[in-house]
Image (cartoon, rainbow, N blue to C red; front, side, top):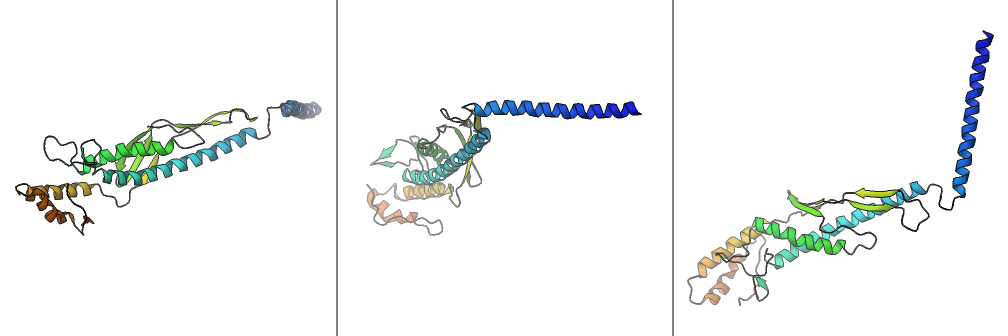
Length: 238
């Protein structure tokens, strides 16, 4: 019985001694690390938090850039008559309905042209971001319902611990900077409706001797309150 008690006491003393020795060893190691010029207490955690904050600011910038680019693209697409080609007359894209047609305003072509113009507009915004180099031409673009989706191809990598900092460089913080833009009530089918109006005007005036006069007289066919179209009365044919 006595031997068992002594054995237990010896075991407890051994454990306590081991803990004290381990604590002393950790203290010595930690003390040496503190004396190192490259060590800053909590530097890893601080750099990770700092990098996370930078990533959130960058993602916000990308989201806003996508939003502004979408608005700009809606305007640019309308200015180009729903087209994205060089078939122009007096600076305006030509709508053709024959074998020479490079631009036929319709829902599907308007969507495709939107994505091409949007990609260029977005890269203009992203290339101006001062803090981090954001990858360009980095998105697979598509529409879902009335949302524009941008799925990032390559991740955005942010260095944890900048070069020259005293903080230890841990690695890279990697995120996929995808985005979604709500196009609200924007309707690509408006181009299809405009095309039908244009075809109707062509049918009305194609056999007229005074073509320009006919077009000016009948151009009000584009005015449609239900669709929200209204042609400027000052607009003249060339």
